[in-house]
Image (tube, rainbow, N blue to C red; front, side, top):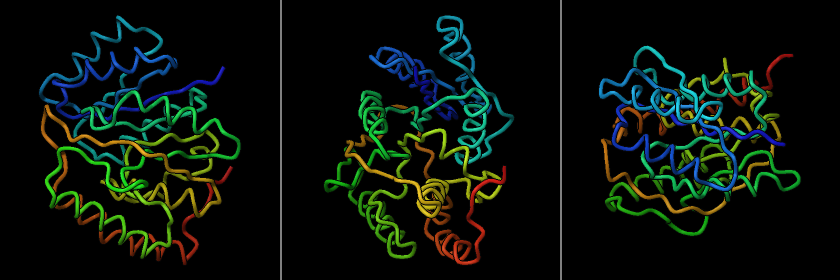
Length: 246
């Protein structure tokens, strides 16, 4: 039986974390969850630890000291998953902007022959975003268009953070070479997978902005995503994007 793990990074998500965990565990597919917790001052970790006792062998918490960035949270989670031989590893936000029921869609899709990575895409069938102001919608949409122009990627939603990775992809990527820690991390991971020859497929999802808690998006994160793609392209030309050494 295939083992599937959902990684949920958290920082100050006490309003959402219990609900998102219970919703994932209510799904037909038996997903495990790893919460990567960055020392939230609001007590998020305490809520998760209480739930670990209720869901032993399905819910896990990886505590880190301080807020170290989205990219390093996922990399730490990927390493944890690889050590435990998970077959499929999912990225998902804690705030319900990604519908947990769409995990089933990603899971069904990745099991098709030849698919290595599945991206839950906001832009593959138009603009499927709810509750964002128009300025943010346009900024996100045209940022992805800019990334495609610079990198040559065909992926419509290059900054998407709702993804299913197969183990063979994560085992092949050299995480020490992944440079970015903000939303540019999402671009870099997809770009690396494509450059290494893996098959990346997008499926349409509806992204709904959080209704509880505070957004982690800021201008520095956005700048990293915009300006980082030039460096990413350069590293590709110089051969610095390649598989992990065995």
